[in-house]
Image 1 (cartoon, rainbow, N blue to C red):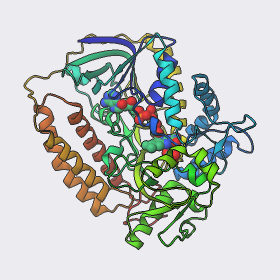
Image 2: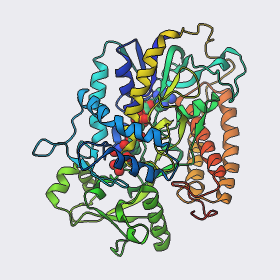
Image 3: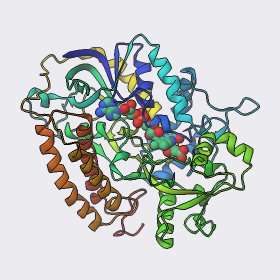
Image 4: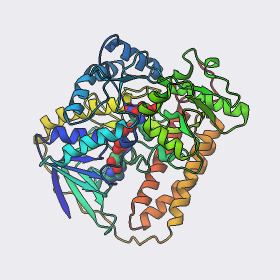
Length: 520
Ligand code: FAD
Ligand code: SIN
C-alpha cells in the first residue's frame, strides 16, 4: 500500500507534536508513533523546561551556564539562538494549553537544577512532561489536518538507495522521499511518501542496562539516518542522570528529579556525610557529568551500590506539595522522603549527540529534518545542562516548521519508490534470539562504555558487539520484520556509534571520561 502526505512526522513526543501543530496550518500531516500516542520519553520529564522568564535572570546568564556545562563543544551561535527564542516557545506551549505552576501572586514558579546559576525552570509539579503531552495531544487530536497513526513502526527512511542508486556518505544530494512503515499486527509494510519528513524519535537509553528512559528509546531515528548515510555526531556523550531511585528490580529506573536538589536535597554517603564538595564547589548542584562521576567514585570507595539523597531537613508540607509523584512512588516502596534518605544511583538518561542538523533542524539529507533528542544541533556540546532538552526540542521543532512549511510546495512525491522487498523472509519463532541479544548489548554498554571508560574496555566492547551485530544482520535478512527485531538492530547501530566515537575522542571532555586521558 502507498500513502501520501505533505509532512510525515515520526514521533509523538514534544518535538514531533510541536512540529505537527505548527506545519498543520500549511498542509496535511501524518504523525506516526510506534507506541500509543502518549507514550514517549517526554511523558516522563519531571524537572521542567528552562527559559529566561524574569530578572534577575538574563539571556547571557542562561547562555553562559549552558556553555559551561557543554565544556567548549557547544555551538555558541546555536545556544544564543535557542535561549533567545525560548520564551516565545514557552508561550506557544501555554497557548497550546500547558499549565505551568504559579505562586500565590500569579507568577510562574521557577525551579533550579544542576549547572543553572539562576532559578529558571518552569514546571508542573514533578510531572511536567505528562502535562505538556496532555496539552499537545489534545491540540493535535482536534486539528483536522493532523492524522495520528499509532502503533506503527517506521523501519527505514526512503532515499535514492531504495531506487537502486548508489548512495555514499559524502554525497550531498541524498534526498528523503518518506518512510517504510510496519503494521505489527498484520506484518504489512506501507510506503509513506512525503514532501518533508521530520524525525522526532527521541533517545537511546535502551542501549544500557540501567536507564531512566522508557522502552521506546531505542535510537531508531539515529540508526536510520546512519544507515541512510546521513551524518551522525557526538554520540560518545551519553549523559547519566546522577539520581535514579535505587531499585534493581525496576526497569526503567524511576527518576528522582534534580529539581529536588534545587529545592535543597543533598547527596550523602551511607555514613550520612555530604561528599559533593570534595569534587566541586557547587556541591550537590554541580553539572551532571561531575555529580555522576563523583557518585560512581563514592560507590567504588564504599563498595556499596548506591548513595543517598537527603531531604529530611526540608519543610515537609512544601516537599510533598512540590514533589507529589516522587513522594508517592517512594512511599510505595516503604521510603518516606520526609523522614528517610532516598537510595539513588546514576542511570543512562540522555544522548547529547545524534543526527547532525543545521540551525533549522535540517539534517544532511535533503527534505529530512530532525528535532528533539535524536538531533545534534550544537546546543548541548559535551554535556547537556538539565532542562535544556525540552527547550531545544521546541525551538528546533518551530524552526524546522518555519523552514519546511515555506519549501514543501517545491517538492513532488517520488512515484518511483518500490514497495518494501520482503521476498524470501520467514517468521522467526525464536524470540529468545532477540531478547537475549538485547540483554547482551546492554551488558556490554553498561560494563565497558559507561560513566568511566578506558581504551581496553572500548576495544573489548567493540569486539563483543561485532559478533552480535553479525548474528542480528543475518537474522534481519531472513526474517519477517517485527518491531523488536528492528529495535535490536537499531540499538546495535547506536551502540556501535557510541563506541566508535568514544574511541576517536582522545581526551576527557564532559560526559566522555576515560582512565587513559588526564583532564586538561
Ligand atoms: P520522545 O519524547 O522520546 O518521543 C519519541 C517518539 O518517537 C515516541 O512517540 C516514540 O514512540 C516515537 N518513535 C521512536 N522510534 C520510532 C519508530 N521507529 N517508529 C515510530 N515511532 C517511533 N528534559 C528536560 O528538558 N527537562 C526534564 O525535566 C526532563 N526530565 C526527564 C526525565 C526522564 C525520566 C527522562 C528519561 C528524560 C527527561 N528529560 C528531561 C529529557 C527529555 O524528556 C527528552 O529529551 C525529550 O522528552 C525527548 O523528546 P522527543 O520529542 O525528542 O522524543
Ligand atoms: C530531572 O528532572 O532531573 C531531569 C531533567 C533533565 O533531564 O533535563
